[in-house]
Length: 534
Figure 1 (cartoon, rainbow, N blue to C red):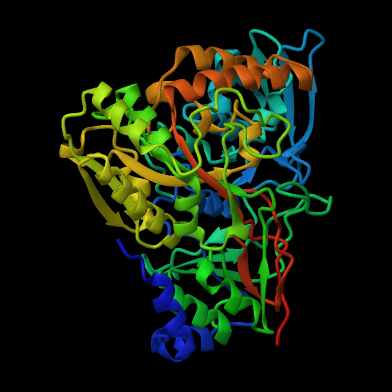
Figure 2 (cartoon, rainbow, N blue to C red; figure 1 turned 60 degrees about the vertical axis):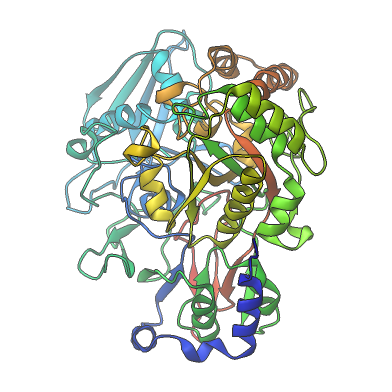
């Protein structure tokens, strides 16, 4: 297999690809007001419901139009957001929350405690930390329009942190939040700092957000996802430009202001442009990982999953994906790299260059009979697409019947929710990533759950591991959590709920006229940005 995209991109840039930008995009850019920011995000929205899917693009949309009860600051400490004050009973089992002044929906109605209660209940159906919370909860009730309580069966000291965790608990209107988590909310009415502009949004082409003039920000300065969400621009437009050459040309010409995930092949070119700036917003980095459908053949067999674990050559995968070694590294700990919980427990499977012979033996032990393996390939995420093609070729070498299923990321985000067999439109493998920071939060990071159909795409099951994970909210000291992390990792790499492919950082690209971007793991908040006219 030859991946020639790098050569094509370099040749296109050298030939001056800025002149090949479609005239429609030029016309849109020419009409753009100075207080409008145009962004090319890491993928495009197909689902607008941040509870229905954990897709980062949908979460970015949710952070724009909805608000949260609590939010994590830049030090990952939970801070009140929609909450004015809160208290806890003497027995540590009842939390009381009061909403702050000035909270209103985009339809001009007031935010109430009932909206919050319904939103918590819906979010907790699918969010890992919410599930843990609900197992310990007697009831969630309203006291009046501005006050609600969470009554627990037993103390849960991390409750505010769980309410602030990721994916975020975004508060919806009660009538929207009363839908089951498996049924999409079809409206886009929140109480957040931006309003969704449905009239200007063109499905498949662009999405438009307008500043919510009625939004009352907190008085504290912006800090991570916490503090005052002050909007300094009038409008933000997400342009769907899947082709990297076209996106770069638009950035160079000033027709867009920001590219979340520029191709690593273009980083040196961007860096050399005096009007452009590379910026690493997620300084902790991310982990590229492989999810396997543990409900269906052949990966319902643990030996098949172990075969993948032994097969993977992380250096080779990341070289194909990222190219420049300065942007990536290998990783063996379930709990990330350089975190307080990183450890080497049960990592004997890791071998420089991988171990295809061991993988072949495990395939034979699994009784693999040539079942078709459908590998989802994101055509608009080059790094993942390259890694997908490479791994598919490596799997074929050891005798796996792999079929690629190319689509844009939005299509993968839809298809990965299907639990059924490949014959019914299901899937076997797909590559995604999560933040290195998220590995320090196994109680809220749904990627790290192993509770079957209640968990995340791939749905691995390990009762032993889940019993250990449930203890995370109970232990107090760093030393206790480090010991627990080792126990969890020992179990995890035996049942193999997912496979790590490597860790990396990838800078975003922006015009130097766009400043104030908030750097946090995973998400791109749109408040606090400022655009200086050129």
